[in-house]
Image (tube, rainbow, N blue to C red):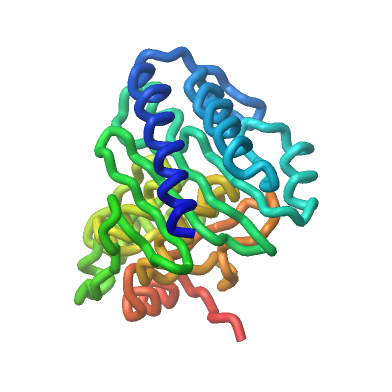
Length: 265
């Protein structure tokens, strides 16, 4: 598995540097049916990485964000080992010249995530995780340290757009944290949490290619998360998932209590 991560880095890092960086803030955007943004960079990175993965691991099938829902569903239902790629997470940021985007890739096998890699080409930060090596940042072990903070002292990373209105309103009017951010790349959000740059997290709905690698890296680094229904976030389906997270158990308990999430039995 360690060799796999090294080979993946050799595939993903050059693809991001050579396909994304020359196009950063220089591409025209299109809009998909769901309203999300698509650029030629998304397609170029997906095509390049898919070809390299097929060459290295011909027995593993490939699912990319820029495939049709029908194709994606058939692949997930197939039961084979599966690469799950978001070629450009944070496309709106990328097209607008906002420096917060990444490439995200997870290996799914037997209904679980087996490894993950998230690469930010602007900061040259490569977050990885596997069962054997745990979480790493640029090859160095990545382990979340207890924050020592109370909930009211934290920096919260929250996407308001996809939350129920009542919850979003309550967050604004009651503000249980010290400050709040929303950056626009789910995969990178998870990695920044793993790096301790924020302390609690909330997102109302993200897709498997958005969260699979990042959430896996976050857990490998020692983080805590669930859905708003107190379920595990990852499922081997296309069903979008909510996300609640914190960097240590005491903050997770305080955060879920404030959100009125009842732990699963």
